[in-house]
Length: 296
Ligand SMILES: NC(=O)c1ccc[n+]([C@@H]2O[C@H](COP(=O)([O-])OP(=O)(O)OC[C@H]3O[C@@H](n4cnc5c(N)ncnc54)[C@H](O)[C@@H]3O)[C@@H](O)[C@H]2O)c1
Image 1 (cartoon, helix red, strand yellow):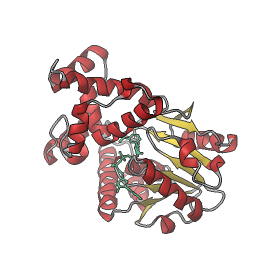
Image 2 (cartoon, protein in one colour):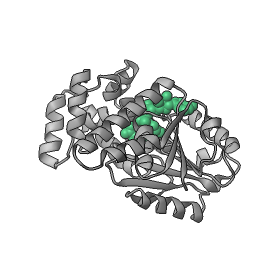
Image 3 (cartoon, helix red, strand yellow):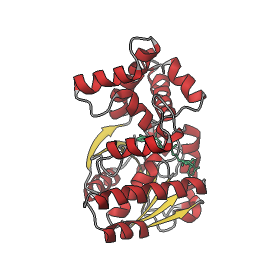
Image 4 (cartoon, helix red, strand yellow):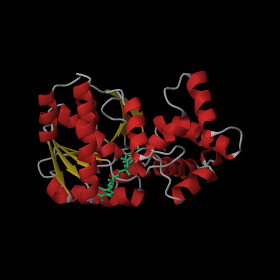
């Protein structure tokens, strides 16, 4: 596998593209928005600069990494030659089904089709393709270049061969793959999201303020980041989508999203990517916060 296509240049897509490119893969980064592609490349370049400043990589490795990435606004053009496609577009079922139908037609028959979905059923996504055996979940964690875990989700029909090949590939990237089965939220978000939702509920009920809730979890539970700040980093729209998938999938009220989360998403307060969530991220504050959190 040398050519990898990544669909979506947002928070996760640019991190996935960065990680593959830094490990010598040729990456075709695809997004419907040229602006998102430009922003994604800028983020990758800034993160590489930080790694050079910390002497984790050389200036030459930075240049080689950037040279390994090319950008496309069309899926058909971008997936040419790709042995693997990692889809990291917006968390929306209809959108992912549409993308996978297109991938099924546009990709070579031997290509593996992976999705970075946080919660949507791999089996359901695979069912719109003609060969569900080659569809798998590759759930990278944010920020991708520094988080070791990749949750590997086997759909109902995913083949052993595809699973083994993706497990091996993750190791080549220096990551730690963990194999899980396909149920709503998989493992990571089934456990994380109820905690984030409860933190928002605690704020909504007036038990404590944003900083106080985060301080309790950081200082008392040794979490590196408070839950409300983590929700801002993940994206409040992404958190809401995941909770809805689990709420609908399990038909269990314990996953019902907090009304405050719903209101904030409707108001366009999506966290760091929109400039405001539970915290305010003006350009200068955002840069400062990101550089503190990203330990590259
Ligand atoms: N944010 C996280 O911390 C996190 C962690 C793990 C997994 N995920 C998952 O990764 C995926 C992407 O999440 P994100 O946070 O990067 O979202 P994001 O909103 O930051 O980026 C999504 C990108 O997808 C692009 N896009 C939308 N429709 C497209 C299409 N038809 N073709 C190509 N590009 C398209 C958008 O223009 C945008 O740039 C989601 O499935 C999400 O659940 C997110």
